[in-house]
Length: 457
Image (cartoon, rainbow, N blue to C red; front, side, top):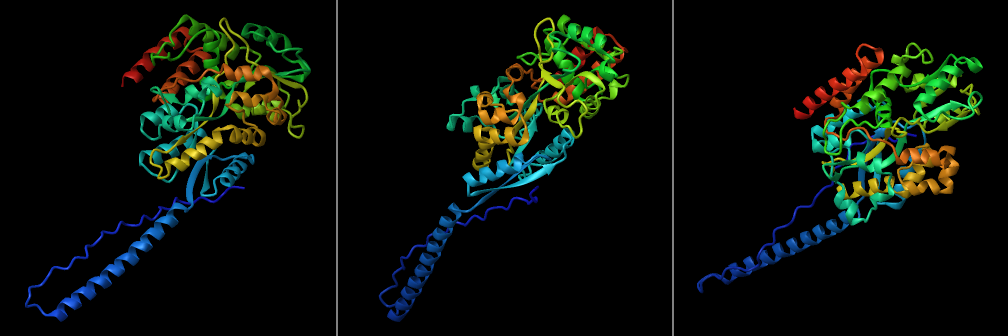
């Protein structure tokens, strides 16, 4: 169902004609009358030619006003019909705008590198693209993308209708650079044939995990994403925030070295090193979590909402019908889930910014987000859509008040133009702490020093 890719065609611009005067200089009284008549005839013919050419120019300009504009919209490959239907609905409402879809690899790192290569070269091929929630600040500072505030103001878009974290993720330096397309947040899956209810706190989860291991032929009690990659950071931020810590504050200061952060990492390390998680948890990413859980190997798992569709698929899941979803457990301060999801941005070098905004506005507005939710299973960023009957029917998760509350309170990762560098620092030090090579206190101290140095460069 993928559309073929085409380069954007440059619109031909008609040059403005220079008007010529039609006054003929008088000859003296001795000049030949025939010469005067000849000159006058020549000038009349030239004026007629110019009038005809100007008429043609005006006719071409009128034709230009009705010409179709073609935009290229880039995103990761989509296995659902959501984006195709989204574009069909947009083109039906905007007959003068056609969309070519550019499918990029699903790997977010590959997508990121593709965009950086294209946008740093000031290439106008891509007009609109989907961006991971961790990219907007980086792309804004690099001057890759277009500021959206003027569009938001002119169309009276109420940003308060979106979940706060999703708006914050697209805001940098007091300006909005991205519109929230769909949201995501970490959730807890648990086996209802083993547990009556989900644990309320992380301490309770440890206790329940120790008691339930081995029940219903399970090998483990808890799964998480423990590999040294971005998933490890999202898990860590949930522990850090749950115990009252932060990574970067509202004034862009690194504040990760705190008692609260250390406590969160201590609890995370206790779980990571426990006997009730796989002994190769340091190689687990999302696919490994999916596979182990649907094969009935674990009592509980932390993952993103997408896993619900896999878990409930009787053709591939051994635990279909025996799984519920809950908010992640509380720490000393709160229950916290790391914000995931995708935003939509406009290439600063797009040759059609107004039309590009129309596409962004549609995809991130009510109609577009309903299509994305119903056909693609992606959680909307517009809060009121969770009260929509069609959206609720699309997924039991969308009708769950606890899940909506999780999205409302989702914690964004640091909004920083050097986030990839900050993430690398966190991955290294947290991985060392989880393995027991250094203490959580040492990890927090190292991250503070290294992240401050990175900020100063």
